[in-house]
Image (cartoon, rainbow over the protein chains, first blue to last red):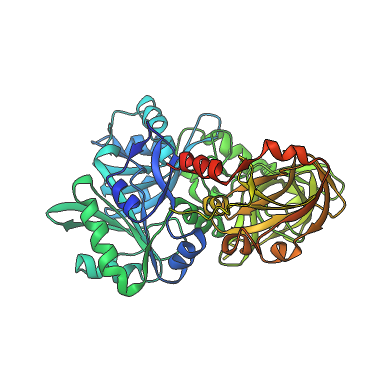
Length: 361
Length: 131
């Protein structure tokens, strides 16, 4: 853990008894009180996540628009100032360099791209190598980020910022001052709950964290670690880079066709993605539940009832909301219909499972 | 953090405990192990009558996030399995040293106990293990 980076909130995590682990080159809390308790706090009240490890890459200048249209799969032209968009960075083979959120700060002038911590360097290099004369700057080490998520997230944020933040629609953001610094309050998240993600300079993140914890007491606020972050997103079947998607997965098979706008014009990987869409993907990402005892985990094989390999588990956990195991995995398209039964291979045992509707919760 | 380490138990370096009553060995995971794992949500144990070797995996415990193998402290035959913890895995968090026992083994060779460690040495081990 010695070389792992520390976010400005590192000592706060230790003070809150966070169990620290190395994740994507950062020292991060995997849990504080316990994954289940934290998970329920987000579903029922409000949770705080230190997501300062995420990368912030700015794309600026008059060619920022053209560059992002070329680099990303979604249509940048749909973005007005103050609007955010889930998108992908496809590679030349139609695989995914990363999944990202693009924040339009000033149309045709300035965009913020929020990227996965594990991919920040890779994405930055990729964007620079495929730049169309924009000014691309990696400002990740200057920015911290706190996600505030849960049904009580917006009331808490309004108390702290003393502004009508509920007026910010989903996937929109506002620049709001906190202690004399500009912050970005974005109505986005990775839990499926209401809430916001706040980008702010390192200088004031500890103060905001304290204010959220203090003023959040009446709402039952809790700090949330990476463990619950993972169970929360798994219940919503949100992709995790490195699990559901990577440099080799096509967005169509991953169920991300909705953020691929083939008619927007040329972009990296477009032709291959278009072909997969036209021919139909060979495999599909599905959600499943277990019919017999066992918990599916990343990397477990999936077999049809005759024992033929038909796919692989990308994520699996005990769902704290449902109190039963849930899994996500790729299955050959012809075996992936809702209600299909198959086996998950768990420690050489074949355990029966069922393709179900998602999100799970 | 203080962990419960009963003085009269034997321990493995993989954080199982073994309580020896003549040739019957009761096996569980230590307080330190349950605390490191977090909330245990699934337990998989062998059938009664199954043979296990010293250091062989005899089962699995899973927390929300992780899967951990269980290693047998001695060679012998599984004579009793704690079905209650399979039904209620959280017992391993609540009372790992008593109600959270996992299996009872009829030990083949008590000289194998020399390969296990005692409470003072185990306390030193988990002291070092802490970050």
